[in-house]
Image 1 (cartoon, each protein chain N blue to C red):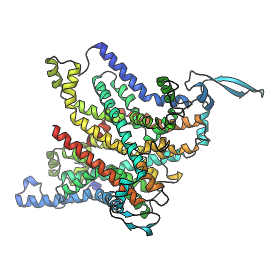
Image 2 (image 1 turned 60 degrees about the vertical axis):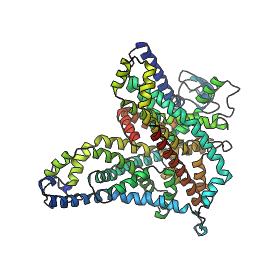
Image 3 (image 1 turned 120 degrees about the vertical axis):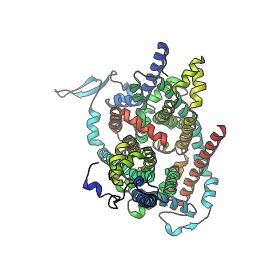
Image 4 (image 1 turned 90 degrees about the vertical axis):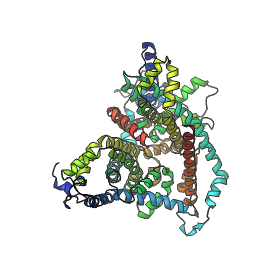
Length: 326
Length: 296
């Protein structure tokens, strides 16, 4: 072991106590040494705990507390306790309905292709040996480009006069059915258009998750299936799919959570328009907290905690369902 | 289980190549368009083999029509017309580098503490951290915003940095604790018998042994900060504190006055560096992403 005086100035002093290592001592001394040694753990976790308490625990607690108050950041003198009033308002107010429905629409539109495309490409990639690095690099490139840059890129891509995406749509559905003002200018096309961009931008994450799951399936299971005379489809159906079950649950769960929280893509690409058709739950929250005249943080906190509750309930549901099905 | 039949192997390979081409098509399109005149983009098409007419002043002074395929004028204009891009880059690189370093430092120290010391409250604290990972960031956002106001850190890079470290810390702790737990106890005992302090064990055994996990965490944290949008959008207002993701979307307000060709060039400059880094470090990226995705 290198003797570096700097290193010995570390946050402990096991050496100074001149204790022999635990195995060499009798029981009483060993436990004393252990206890002393274990207490050093506090020093190691201390910076993280301080960070956590200040930057995460306190904001969470504060936001929870505020969710029971009528609280405006810029008018703190008007703070008023309303108990569950904000939650009731969040559930009943009409303006919240459309963002909520839009978010569900997005989830329904986005999650099935996001999961299935990820699965199919992963299974295909898993079969390829030669040139795999090239294919993977090409397919994974979009995931490293930030959501915001991708969104701006796709605004251009969808542009009604020169966008390549628009041209492809015209080619597919014909001049008459294509949206006039571009994909993002049409209430019917905007949300699917955003979902497609999200798929392109993020599907590599699901591919990677499935690839990890595929790596874990032992080869002899396939060999056994081959011996039994199973064809390619049967091997996929009776070996791959059941073995990927855990990965599948994880991917679906993460995908649904991600789409329930969708904000940046519609915010950048359409700003919620046209006619609020792409305004999402988190966008509504953002407007209340940061774009309203008075920063309605109490109400926004209630919306945030409601979303967390929805996600939590959904996760528990999926987890329980999965356990039962096993 | 590689496919054996050469025909199906070729079909498989070609379809994946098709997927790959679709994946990079928007980028290629932007690259092509960034070398075109605005009028050419709108009328003649963006690909280099499509030509367009421009008016040029001949040495004799008269204006003549010339046929061009590509031009560099967009890039010349980016330098003069698009202000702030370099500031956004500096901010984003600083945040990603400093944020990754701090998250890894604080995170691995804590992971070591949790994995290797049985102090009172260990499981309780760690359980609390784990539980918090599941709470969506949107919930933390409002509380942190208010905290930033109180600490006078709103609209500062330092405030954003603190938020990013806090946001990535828990995942680093989670991954690294698993890595550290899998290191055999014998190795640590051996080091301790040699008289190593726990700090030396951390620095000279744990860190080298856990370097794959560390690399994965580093890539994950770096990418998540590099791409972060929501906090940067809400916590900063001035051009001096803006990050690249937020800055690039602000261009939208200038679209009316901005030449489309220049816009293409700007978008290209905003994704090219990270794409090049990715291509160079592809193997590590995928490994890092899978490790992180797996644990998340």
